[in-house]
Image (cartoon, rainbow, N blue to C red; front, side, top):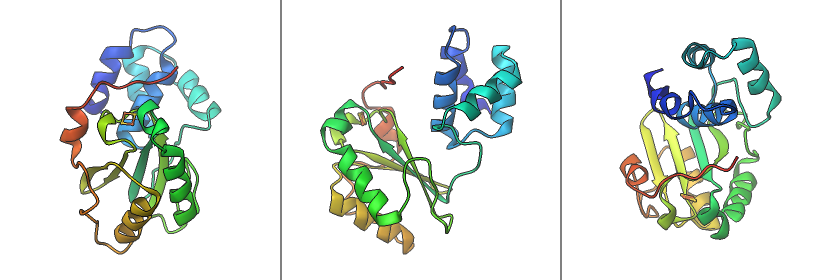
Length: 179
Ligand code: FES
């Protein structure tokens, strides 16, 4: 749970930040495992029952593991104005899942997120799997559907990647999370 420390150091003592902490936690882990909620409770002094209450009240939060490939589709400002909604529609059309849902075969989970920090590549989607994370930018309806097909086929496309790797996300502009 050490991966949550930067989040807790930034928001742990900020009043009314529980939703933000849970959002950030889910962004990092893909969902909200019990272990993470217990850790947040211990670090913030917030009752575990309250954390569960918030985590179960908002539909954006998931308490179950996600699919083999977590599709983190950015809906931050830059991506939004560059057609992220169209990309989301293309993903939904291709996979038959909406935000927060997992395909029946357990392969994909779609998660609409705030800024991934690489706005110059907008619209952007990060794909997280046990192999790591890849950031795909300058997406189009066709390219994202091709990407999903190739992931499903076991061969991740690289030719449409405008920028890859978590380093791209880390070195890009700061995040923006609406609250
Ligand atoms: S708004 Fe999408 S990466 Fe910043």
